[in-house]
Length: 441
Ligand SMILES: [Zn+2]
Image 1 (cartoon, rainbow, N blue to C red):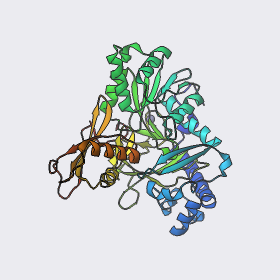
Image 2 (image 1 turned 120 degrees about the vertical axis):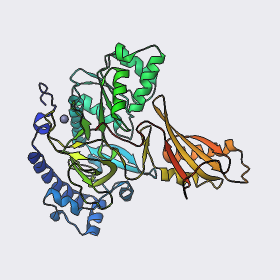
Image 3 (image 1 turned 90 degrees about the vertical axis):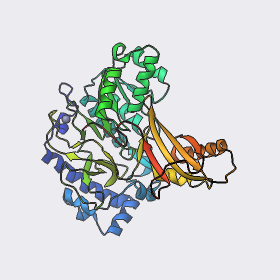
């Protein structure tokens, strides 16, 4: 910790690439060795693939290891990825799969301490300092958004206000009355909050002490960040994290704002051709694959994020040497981010098809006053006599219970929806920068 510099951890943040890769090589060997010994899931996976820890000597050798993703990781439920005795675990979080099964993430005391340190680096990188008041409107619960920045703020000597999402008028009062200087939340919620303040005659850009906003979990384009900056009177930064890795604390923009620095002393980041699984040349577009090198409790090795982006290692003007993840331009699995939740159109299709009364359908995603809104417009089949209102209510309940989001449902007469050739489902995304995740550049 060197508070007199722009870095929270100068030695690590500015370490030359060779030094970082030396650390990564050592950590990778140790991780694969531990996962093979302690995790039943990885032992089986690697035995089937005919690979042993002894095969991993260099960073490039990571390519011998099979990939893991949300679907294959389901087999590890509940403790197949655990590498320590359960009594060493201090906190459990969880990601979810498309089928809503939980993917538990276990953390030891060391994991939690390092999570806080990674988030402290991020808060510091955006210009926040000791004594700054961080109002954290990410969810607190099994998902990891809230706790990460809470631990980060405490590690950095800042003041954490765990406001969580919702209760917007109270959020606005807290910003004004406490003199909040930094906020962390989804960008759509930040728009909503700024507009709600205007409805109350409050101009947060003029009347608050806000100076930094950290935005993640859904698309954040350059234009959105500019608008948020004007609306709330702050500098907006994009950050990246996945529940599977105790994100946030994985990658964030610096003041140069050209991509997000990903902490290489904790994560090995690969960019692959999603079709062949082979690495693409540095700087070229591909799918991001993450390995959690420093994890003590949970083994997450060669995990396919399905996020499409580019990675560059060139030195940044901010002095940090860690690789930068550029703008996330889409997903390889067709998933959409709606209000911070990852939604799979194929899953909506599965739910709609559970009802024999329904035919083809459209999914419309719009953003009203900054908040994402999903509407399922579905044709009823000829001869169905159940009242539309009852059908809509049943479908809404089913989608909510399978997918967490609550859509609006519009039941249409047979043959009224325009469909593509041979298609039973159309996605119509009317949001600005639709289908785009992550941050600028
Ligand atoms: Zn930088």
